[in-house]
Amino acid sequence: MGKKRTGNPGLMKLLTTKDGREVSLRPVELSDAADMLVIDRLTTEDGRGMVRSPEDLPADVDTMREELRSWTSGAFKEPWGCCFVAELGGRVVGYSEIKRPKARLVSHVAFPAIAIHPEYQGLGLGQLLMEVLIDWAPKESSIGPVRRLELYVRADNNRAIKLYEKLGFVLEAVRKDFILELDGRFVDDHIMVRFLSPSGSSADT
Ligand SMILES: CC(C)(COP(=O)(O)OP(=O)(O)OC[C@H]1O[C@@H](n2cnc3c(N)ncnc32)[C@H](O)[C@@H]1OP(=O)(O)O)[C@@H](O)C(=O)NCCC(=O)NCCS
Image 1 (cartoon, helix red, strand yellow):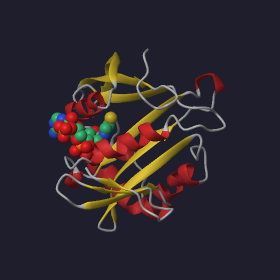
Image 2 (cartoon, rainbow, N blue to C red):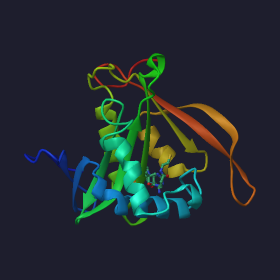
Image 3 (tube, rainbow, N blue to C red):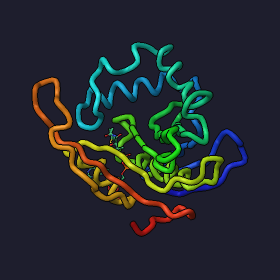
Image 4 (cartoon, helix red, strand yellow):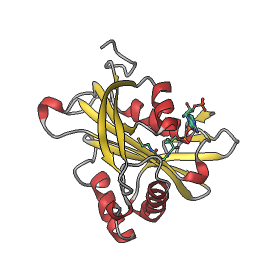
């Protein structure tokens, strides 16, 4: 992936996918709701990654737009969180989000999550979108930097586990039979963590 800075304030970075296409990375906007709902529907139907069923999703684009307000003006507006999107050919093809708890004694913890449109997986976007969260986390703010990144991943989501391991996350615990699939199968879930120093590099635990 090549990276170059841009002068456009809304645009954080211009990037190139593994197959040479240009992608822009920027904070989410309410007008992204339709594209993001498509990603959520497809990655949920896929059944291999997300811990949710179709009825957990926003029913329509208007509802999705209301949910996005939590990033632009609501509970997870900076410094409590952030949501970034990757845009390719005028369409949002992936996003990553991060949330910090309001409770003071645990607000140094942050919870990242990520989803890429199935047609755009394997192009390096997942890694780029997770790296942007890792860059965001140690930023100085009124509530201090993030020390602990914590995420949850299905034990059978091998591609996501490989991505997180590549980015320095380690397995902390297995939540046995945490997920009960609609077909009656139980699936384990992993808690993975990465500790950050104030500079953002991985810290000794
Ligand atoms: C998991 C997901 C985010 C990965 O994003 P992606 O853009 O497809 O991944 P990238 O192209 O950035 O790959 C980065 C790394 O991830 C791992 N990876 C990606 N696809 C993989 C696969 N099919 N098998 C094994 N490892 C894989 C590799 O370590 C890869 O690094 P490499 O290219 O040097 O081998 C994406 O597949 C996705 O959105 N899945 C559905 C939703 C989901 O599972 N979200 C996570 C919930 S915890």
